[in-house]
Length: 511
Picture (cartoon, rainbow, N blue to C red):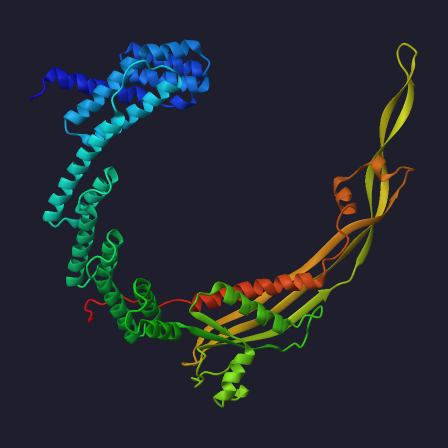
């Protein structure tokens, strides 16, 4: 039956009124009285539902307002009817998603009315109505999905099948159709050589329906074949990642465990630290500088690198060299040709050729500065009464200015050399300065019989009197300098050596 122009106009107007008044800006931030007035305004314009919402908001802030409660009770039935008519208009016009939304909002509205005893009329059976509308909406989404599926628009079909399930789950064969859609997307991708996309969608087919067809086997086979491709091409990290994906799906597949271990071993970069040479033979505060710097760099590399970096210490390096009959003399920072040393990819050499500890010793400078002091002076006021007033004077003070401190400087270099090629991967200078300085005033002498607490000092002098008088322990400064060196060098090593070469997926794959 066709609707008249008048009924369509009334429906459109009611929708506009509801939307307009229920979306007024800042409604929740208004006072209770302001909200009540907004409710009055909406009701006067025929928007009873929006008016009731404003009254409810007002009562949330001022629940004891009998006047607002009465206004809500007076408008409750008209507001309910207005919202119900809107929901039914949506339902009758075939917009079941819109109808479902409106019925749910209406149900919440009724519950709020009950909270304030503002409902004395019968309502629809929300449980039954929502079930019926959900069923209808789910059927609509399902039919849309079936149409997309038949037209091989599988992505859109999946979206509609999932939409049906949100409305009613389980619903018909939605899960199986979702799995089949993913399966067909995967098969199409496989045909055109988009193997990774195929493997991912085969897995998605199983996520909707466990063990769907042979999707799991197909996915594992593709990841395994990708792993073999990268393994044979020398892209070991890529191989490991694909073997790992295959293992996650089915760890029992073929010789996957062995391939995974092989790829991990081949992908691992082994970095060995040699002796860090201190040509100055100077150490500070009992700290063996070369050894501590080496350990600092090594520990930072371990902390920052990923799973494909292995660090060997000096003892491990020379043990490997001895096993392969390579002398320590052959392992040096000047090597420029490949070294047949198995089990090591890069050698880290360090040299410390500057260790300077500059100390001028404490100096004393005798200085003076003005200060102010007060004196109570007697006087006779205009009526002949004896009184006192405060008078300020300036006088010189004398003090000793003590300066002391030290400056530390560490200089050298770190070189990282490829064992297989003899080329220099990193050649990094070390230049770190640190130290501490103190300046303070002592032996304060005032030229008047006052204490420091009773006079006003120059601000700079006051700061010097209260300044720190002890130099920071040199060991603390050295440790900060070593930490800075370790941070910089380890960052360079990790950035240069802990990276995977870029590799593209194959366009043809055998499996």
